[in-house]
Image (cartoon, rainbow, N blue to C red):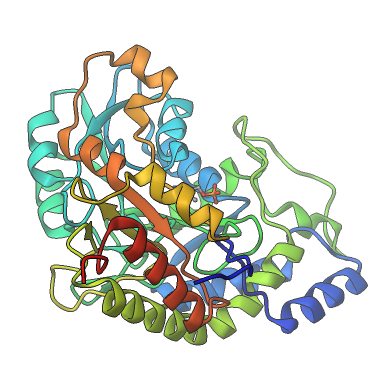
Length: 388
Ligand SMILES: *Cc1c(COP(=O)(O)O)cnc(C)c1O
């Protein structure tokens, strides 16, 4: 079993159409926020069911905007899984909130409603949900807790473009603010980009203000014929706008989304077929709720204690065979900045899962023979099939 070909952890699929759309944007003389961004917003709305989209420069920007709309005051607590990318947490701090780390369900890797109930105090203001890897979180339970305690919900849907919970697309909620990421590795990309789905037109306007220097209206319109130079600053906002160049990539990506999805599902099925039966690993679960769709942003396996190699050793073994892997995520409560604030916090499920997990390649450019090779390497290294 020798193979020199490199299989990176991720490789984006950018259709040729993106190149011609970018060229047209450049030739038009308008390269920053303009008609392409508007078109991308409309298309993402149509694809996800959200009615009030605001395109921004990243999901981090979308999260900062969403948290700011909720207006945290000093001491306001925000329940959030530690098992997420640091930006989910960092932006809570940036918006003036206090993150309170919640454990995950060991099967879905999403925030555990039981632990939410234990961590609610009189200061709790909001719950942040991360649909981990594209697995929709248990929204019925979470929304019922939120209703009872009058809490807002922000959905970090960086992994969940294309996910559905009980027949409702992620992003279509009228009750929650939802944040998408179009970062290079995500299910669809604009290279860098994000989108906030607001709950009503007033919120959409406030989000546009916040993400554009606090300026009263779309700045780009003031350069059009008949546009006025006048603008008013209503609050000290940020510069979080998306450019037409980035939106051009996104528009082209949306067109190939069904094909990307089919390929992801085929790879997931192949991984499951070739790795099922290996007693030394746990495979990711399907959504436990009916009429729910997993977007399969990541394929994350757990290396169990009976394996011949630890997670780190397996990662090293695969790397020597030219296979890239990653760990999603190192828990945030164990990161130096947050550890100092919560020195004795223990989240048992998060900590156990985080020591075992390894994300393996999952993207359109992966061939089925790559998948077979990856599985053969995993089975060999963990000690499955050797005794035969
Ligand atoms: C990627 C990611 C983000 C941040 O997205 P950017 O667009 O890179 O800012 C936030 N949360 C999660 C869970 C992510 O995976």
